[in-house]
Length: 82
Image 1 (cartoon, rainbow, N blue to C red):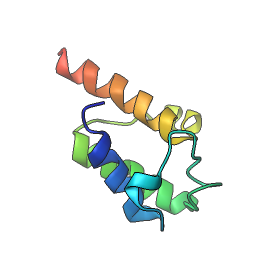
Image 2 (cartoon, helix red, strand yellow):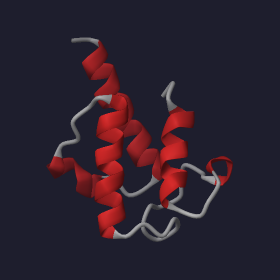
Image 3 (cartoon, rainbow, N blue to C red):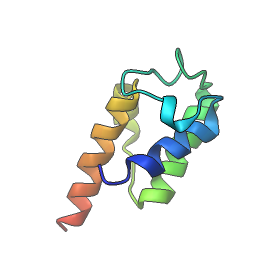
């Protein structure tokens, strides 16, 4: 993802962890302390920032930073090819 820095900065806004200390295996709720509301608001920020639409049915599959990066990569590459 070319937008990793932007993505990590958005994550860092929601937790008390600097962007450069966030690793791909960190879990949003368990490791970064996101509440359910934080996570949903965070996803909305991602949609706005990256101009994508996150499928509500797919949200249950996003647990870690890596999950979100892969999902966003798929969305952004799909929208770029349209």
